[in-house]
Length: 372
Image (cartoon, rainbow, N blue to C red; front, side, top):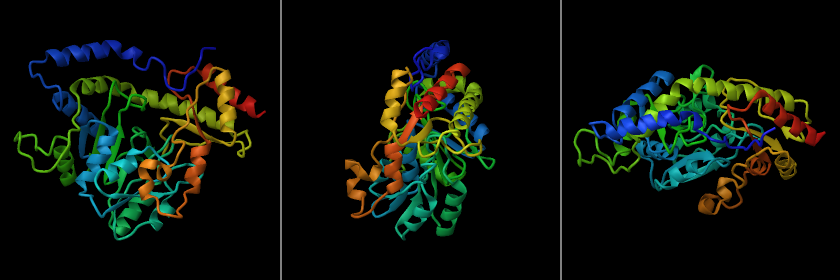
């Protein structure tokens, strides 16, 4: 049995010829447009077709997409945005960098996504947006957040960075929020050769705002005429060409990830959930970018897997409000017990699509053997 690292080895080995072709075609194109050219526009149209979004704006990264969404809503000093306490840091930094305040909500103890009950309890007259994030293999409770936003008159920024291709109750990830964001960071489900992201919205005014903000506040027609204070979050034409190449096989890779997750969840159901808690079973609202279990004896299991040649990964070992960068936004006496537990217990295991059935069985067998 070969060594099975957590991150996929030779990530784009099968795409080398396509990458060489993209480099040559963009580099020799008479238009000499290396950013925001016709390939970017074609890629945006492809995402529109896949999701049904009225407006899709490709940008420099998933983080950039969150920052553009915050900016398009005009959020700034004195405003608050409710974000998950256990998550990747851009949910908070995108708010802080706008001069606003992130308000940290605890997460569900099983799914590890933001708890809507706690989030709703934090809404004040200063709350200008909710920012639920899909995490690991679970979409956030978007029906609750959409209803909450409607009731309180608050827009929803849907951090779907890890969830492209997931569907909840018939609605694709990225389409629930007032704005939705995807990421194309290398190891994401539709990862690319560098950085990239998209913002999705049905609101034409927000779509126009994002389009201008990503390109220094220009409208794309009159160069050096700046309607807003924007930033540089433009999309690369080589990456656009590469993503257009990978998009037709994306559904197949997602299905393989889901098959692996189904197998893991079935196998781990036989274990005592005081030792291992697997994600909830099923396909509705699932985004199998990462498969993460919760383990009370995490470091012991990590060592055992490592001895067996199986890689693993711990995400976010410190909750966001306990990070030095965000300590100023952690109210005295506040606590996020479920976020602290998620940080101590989560362990992600390999789920990349090129794993064979035998390798998937070996990973599951090894985990079950450890607890036996």
